[in-house]
Every structure is written in structure tokens, then in C-alpha cells.
Length: 402
Image (cartoon, rainbow, N blue to C red; front, side, top):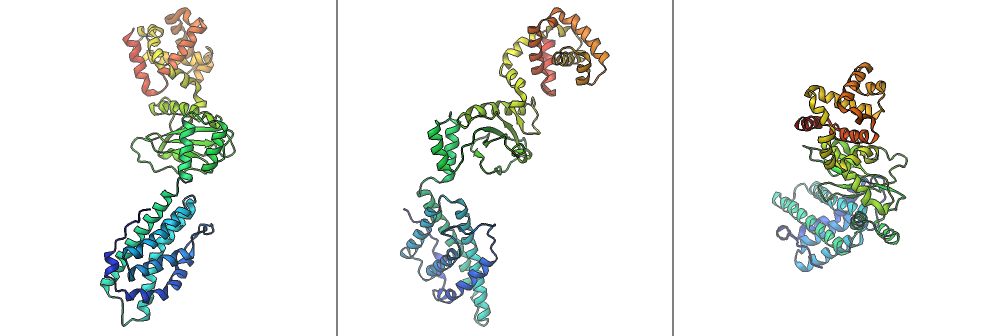
């Protein structure tokens, strides 16, 4: 294992005798700092705790006395060993890093205590600057050694989770392989899961999503992917809602875990329609709630070609009235030509709908009596009127072929 480099000039310039003066003050300074250090409700993990800070300050004093390669190598090996032992415990690594940083505070408490004990002989200002520089160099080198040890210990839980996500989205492992992958990643295989596709909102520079426990993620690409276990379970409905401020969020259908790739495909189709304004993007949009739109837009090119023929009768109508007739026809098709229901959808008087229906019957004739023709018209109109910004394109298509 290569030894991380230590920036030694500052250590070399500090009088070696200062280390002997500082050592007796270590325990008191550590106790003071530890007393004010919150643990977040968790006990210290094995391998970290008070001894971590005592060791760090002892190593610092050792390096003041001798900063040569022979002295630094065993200290670097100590921190690399810590990194290797704690590689699979993220909480322990966080605690280790926090204690190393707090050792710097303890050092300055030791310096303050030294000044109070001998006010007539304070540590000179140039030496204080050297202590600060040396402390930064020590923390950098120790952290690098921890990171090196962690990397060389083999993949940890985070890497195993990334491997699990990649395997699920590549088509799904068989049950035995999935169980093994999940076990290494510390993840419980749910009965069903749903894939969520994310896209940053225009003009936003979103932060990394804060993910609930159990949610797997691939955040490496331009469209991050989440895998949400048991999406229909209690309290799961609002799980992704906090992401909406920064992200457009679309969710695919709930499927068995080995079919995650299928759920993702529909999540991405749903996301594409939300980005175009066809589906709403101010909520977590579920593809299962918009089946008709998803099916229709799968055949969008065919629908565009069919629109030229099926909507041709509207080409004889003035542009302003044409759009109202298109909206009215779609509403009538959706409620089986019941004028009162169509009027409620359009927020107009039923008599207005009946007047427009007569005009539509004049234009389309027997086509409005043919179930197949009506189905095609409904699909075309749903696609053409799916979002306000698409209506101008719909009118232009009709006018161009009128």
C-alpha cells in the first residue's frame, strides 16, 4: 500500500520541545471537546471514540518531534487500517472524520491551557502559525490514508448498492442472484417496487436528492433513477413529493423487483410527456394514472399522419371556431355524446354543445356513427389537444390539409 504524503516543512520548523509540553494536556482537552460533541442519538461505533482523538493528538506530537518518513509510515498505516476496518460502516467513517476534525479544536484548547499556565512565556506567534499549518497538513494526510485503506479493502455497501441497481436495470437477475446481490448491499428485496425517473426543472441547479431509507438510486446520469420499494404501502404515497421543488418526477408501474427495467421504461415515457407539457409536472406523475396518453403517444407518428385525413373536415371551418369544435368533439367522444356531460367538461351551456354537435355532424357525417372512426378520432384529438401549447400545432395541421 502506498503511503500518503505528509507536508513536513511546518513540522520541521516547530521546536521539538513543544511536543513534550503539550502531551500532558491531551487528556483534559479531549474530555472537554468530547463533552460538547453530539452523537446524534447513536453510540460510538467500534473503532472510533475518545481514543481516536487521543491517538490523533499523540500522533501530531510525535510528528513535531520527528516528521521523517520512518516516523510517518506507521502513523499512515494506522489510519489506513482504520479506513479498511470501517469501510463497510458509513456511520463509523462519518464519526471518524468528525473526531479527526475535532482533534484540531482540542489542539488549540491545549495551546490556550499552556498560555494560561505560563502567561509570562507564551508560544510565539510564528510558532502558532506553524502549528496551524502543520495541523491542516496532518488532517489531510490522515484522511487520505483512511480513504486509501477504505478503497483497498474492497467494495463497500455503497458500491454493492450501485452494482445491484445496475443489475436490476439491465434486465433483472434471477431470484438466487438477486438475493445474493441484495444481501451484499444490505437491502431487503421487496415484493414489488416502482422505478422513478427524475429530471432537473428548467433553470434549477438541484441538490442531490435526500432519499428515504430503502430507496435505491442511480444518480450518475442526466436523468437520475430511483427504485422505490413497496410503493403502495402505508405512507409511501408522499415519499417522493419533497423532490418536486427541484425535479420533475415520473413513476412507472409497481412490478416485481426483477422487472425493474420495465417499470423504468414506462417511468421515462411518462417523464418525457411531462417535460413536453402533455402531462402535469407539478406533482409526482404516475404512468399508471395516464395509460391512455402513454398508449396514444407511443403511436404519435402514426397519429400525426392519420390526423391529416381524419380531421380534414375541420379544414372548412374558420380557425377560431375550429379549435372550439375540436375540444367539443373530444368531450363528446369521452362521454358518449351526452351533451350535458360534455357541457360540464367544457364549462358551457348544454345548448351550446348541441349547436356545435349539429355542426360536427354536418362536417363528419356518418363517421360519428362508426365506433372505429370515433375511437380513432378520440385518440387523435387526445394527442392533438393534450396540452395548451399543442393546440396551435393541431389547428395548423388541419388548416394545412383543409
